[in-house]
Image (cartoon, rainbow over all chains, first blue to last red; front, side):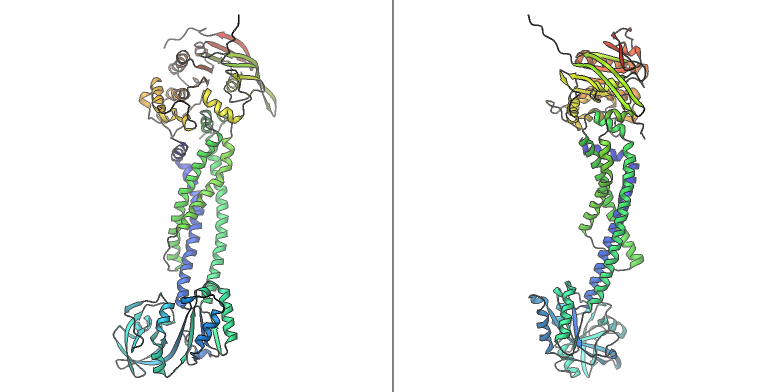
Length: 397
Length: 243
């Protein structure tokens, strides 16, 4: 038997007090874990949202009137010359180092059109796009049904909502501007404007709508800019001032703002957690002090059989570290449960709780630190008691 | 002709202990000088407050005298640093207290072997457990080896304390009123065990008691009054009680 085993046996024997201590440590750890995991959850949700916007920034004609912007935020009518694509690439590359394949520029052409399906006219929004660059920029894009189209052929993919509302399914044929187009796949819903569209190849759209060399929108995707909002703002400014008659905007800015606000809120919550931890440390201090004074005779006995102050201290440190470890681990899993419940019944963020070992480590470390910091001083003091004094003590439980 | 002076095992020279309290100074032990030999059983008797426990604490290096010297095997122990005292006590002394409840989370054998959680004795590799079992058995607790303290009677608990004191093979055992809470049968068992240990193992045992009958079994009985040693009687002054 060694000191650790003495510590474990003592903890087991003093179940009541150990339980108090366990609860005092577990509660702040559970709160801390809940905050961290919910923040993580919100981060994931916002990242998903951001990816739904798809692009770092978009370039559209400068003087688009409000009525020219569709209710789902798509520019209609006004167009840009496709020659701008290279100019935009050059400007962006002035601010970011060689990004190689990660810089994606993808033009789109939007048109309102009436689509015929089985003698029924369906008012719709058609997006012509460069399918290769779109799919590179949107790896999360997925079909709920069917297959991807060959955009060089007369094939189309329908947005999820559009297909559901109009009863479209793969292999249906529709007529757009007199051309029969086969629907090959249905996009999953992303709660974005794209759920309401039909997608065909960019060249096909230009051909059908007689917009040769024109685009409605030029989307830019850059990982470097996504990561650095300040840099992105500079690029947007450079594009707006350097290229006439265009308007560069960053669709992600809104999401970023929400994210920053959320982070600030959580920082505030973390401050509250810190206060909770401090209060807990004082509670633990009280519990430990009371518990130790009931063990004065035991300390005297241990010293009388040869325990040094350091060894006694070690027994107590083991005890409190063990409690901290168990309470920290339990606190983390309680925090996971609370995060799930919070999301399910209150926040409804929808993201699944990610397993993050670093949070478990943080929770366990917090538990052990709380327990140890609160107990070390009274333990140190009491371990120094004289044997003769310990047997005179009236404290006993 | 050369005279060889044989050194006593324990020697107290002019030892005094004064407690300084808010209400003034209290002299607990007053200028006591005495020598103890190896294998001697010594009883300290006297009324409450006569200084028995304080004297035992000074002899056992649990407390330092305000004045005077305490020597064990010729070495002064009252001036040792706390760190050295811890090591010294481990090797030389064992203690049995009046309220010597064993640790409640350990069984009888674990309580007996408790000191070895804090130090490993020299030249006694292995077999400590066997030795512990042997000592416990010799004290009549062979059937209680793995029992927890709450399953033991008062007399059995005191025997566990004796077993724990013996396991380290000390030179001196100091027992502060070891029979105070026991019935006569158990009191006799404890003191007779002390008697046998001093004779068979050449141990020196010093115990304090109010019970003159038990004190009578000792080789020497030291009478204390108000901190002063007032009388020293040769042991066996009272007829040795039969069991």
